[in-house]
Structures are given as C-alpha cells and as structure tokens.
Length: 234
Image (cartoon, rainbow, N blue to C red; front, side):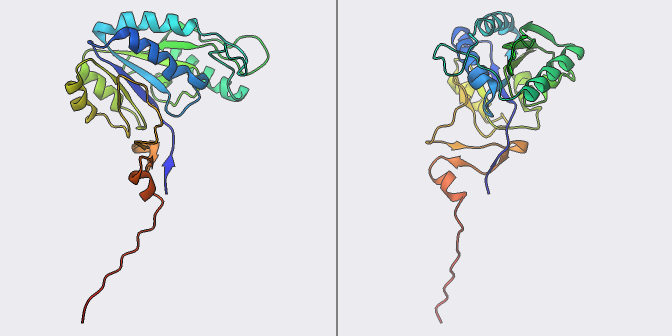
C-alpha cells in the first residue's frame, strides 16, 4: 500500500542563499496550478538576515502574476477548483490575521464570477496559532516566517504533522547535505523546488503518507508481494 496524503512543505532560505533565484523559484513553487498541488511550497521559512529582502521581492512578484483563463497561455494564475474551497482558503487567511499575521499582498476574493482568490503572501510569526502555519493551504496563499538562524529554521520546518517535500536554499552545498538529514520530510531539494521525478523516490513521512512511488526499485517494491521459499536438504 502506498498513500500520498498531502503536506505543508517548507521552503527554507538561509542567509547565504541566492535571493534572486530563490524568489524566482519560490513564486513557481507556491503558485503553480494556483497553489493547488500537494508538493507546492507552503511555508517560507527565512533566516532574519535575508527576510526583509525576500519578503519584499516575493510579495511584489506574487502581486504581478497575471490572472486569467487556464486555457490562455499568458495566464500565470487561474481560478481555484471550486468556490467552497476558495471560501475555506479565505477563512484560513482571515483566521491567521486574527492570530496576528500580516497580509503583505492579496488576501481578497475578486468580485467576479468564478472561484477566484488573489495571489496572497502572509507574514506570520513562529509560535503563533496562525492556521497558515499548520494547515495544508491548497490554494494561492504563501506564509512567510522569519527565524533567527538555521537551527531555528530546521526546528520550525519540522513543527508540522506533515512531511512530504521540502526545499532548502544555501550556497554551501556541504552544509546543505548535513542540514537535509535533519529535515523531517520524504524529499529534500537543495536550491530547487520540490518536484516529482521518476528517477527518485516520491513520498512522505508522518501524516504525509507511507511508502514510495517512482525511483525505480523503491517504487516497484511497494507493489510487490515477496514470497519466501525456504528449502532444506534432507
């Protein structure tokens, strides 16, 4: 049995990250398919030294996304699947604001037909009860959280009942390899967004599921009934 049960994937940005590239990828990682993806980045955990610049760039890039019909090749953000899902997402943002979070951009439903919701970036403090830090926000809403250092970033990333994918941004690859081992997620992508790639195992830990798909032998063994045959010569 293999179960992929969704996630609240962290996108961790350390102080030495290439911020221009990190923001560019962050926008795609969060808002692809209008944010309706199990492996979309949802919690953007940024070390304090890089946080202000990341927030400003990220919010600006999100606000500039072109809304439109999904069949239009120029569209960067379409409507959500259903209006009730849009309303649920809007409720998560409202509850997060009530818990102390700040909307940096978006946060509203355009007054027009369809399940539309603006590309939204919310700044929330670690340790609060803001639902954007706990829920699987399945839509165009990103939560940005500032932390003091990389240790706090990893700790916050792991403070989730989910553990599907994760993204870690730093130019020190040796350091990244060590930190990746501490991240409680089935997948860690360094300086890249989480993706489904047939060459590597796909799946999560904790409430994000059990078992693995893809990845050659890893995925194949999940669907094989092993038979043990013991032969004794007498």
